[in-house]
Length: 275
Ligand SMILES: NC(=O)c1ccc[n+]([C@@H]2O[C@H](COP(=O)([O-])OP(=O)(O)OC[C@H]3O[C@@H](n4cnc5c(N)ncnc54)[C@H](OP(=O)(O)O)[C@@H]3O)[C@@H](O)[C@H]2O)c1
Image 1 (cartoon, rainbow, N blue to C red):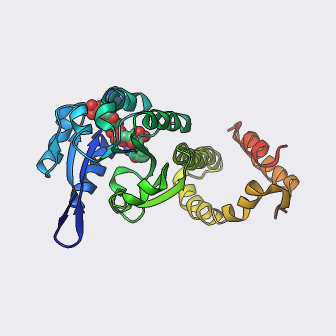
Image 2 (cartoon, rainbow, N blue to C red):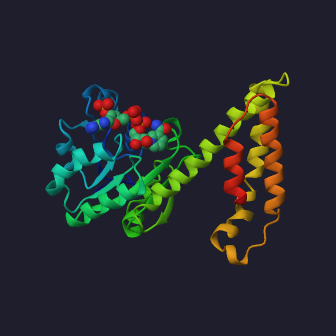
Image 3 (tube, rainbow, N blue to C red):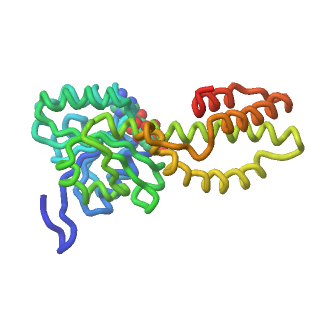
């Protein structure tokens, strides 16, 4: 580690995986003044970053031993294991931040492997698309050893806001997947709603302009509903289960009557009311 000028502490950092996301992460680190070594399975993808000042490693093993801090942004858990496991000796004593999307249990299993080989593992879930990296709306969920995350906070903040969600290495993946689940539930409701309004002469494009601000306003209800999940024994809901079930029943009937039947609303009713 060395100091550049009076503000940036330069670190040797390796980034493995230069897809759309890994490239954005490497670029953010270069912009932050770090010495970045990159590696990608298909070497051509490293060329733009080489032109911007990154060193290119010939092999993943070379990249893993070139830095104290290693960022992984590969495809999945299998691709992470494929490159990390054979390099256990090279990684001893280093910190690895795995920003590849994996399941919580895979993150924990990699944590056990890391413990056995004296590697410090941090797991992360990126809540952004590549063009957002380094911008004000990006945030990344982190789980694992809090002290290691704090030690690297200034570097990790180059990607976006740092949100620590717990010591359990599976926590970042669990929050990440919960948030993505919310996104897909919303998209499913929009797809279905678009079909429904078209049967009355409307368009999905018009629905989009009306549904987006309404749903945005509705997200304030999360904070009111959270105690019903965290401490259900003390919770008095604002709306009864019967009222919610009847409201969803009306939506379901409209979908069926309009010739666009769906299982979506029955699933929502069961999830929200148990009925
Ligand atoms: N893009 C997003 O909006 C976003 C958002 C949040 C999280 N993420 C996560 O970030 C990770 C990377 O996403 P991405 O958008 O950068 O994907 P991408 O553009 O499809 O790139 C995938 C990367 O994984 C590499 N790869 C795949 N299999 C490999 C293997 N067996 N060994 C070594 N490298 C392998 C690819 O190398 P080649 O170039 O050789 O194929 C490429 O560098 C994923 O886990 C994704 O879920 C992405």
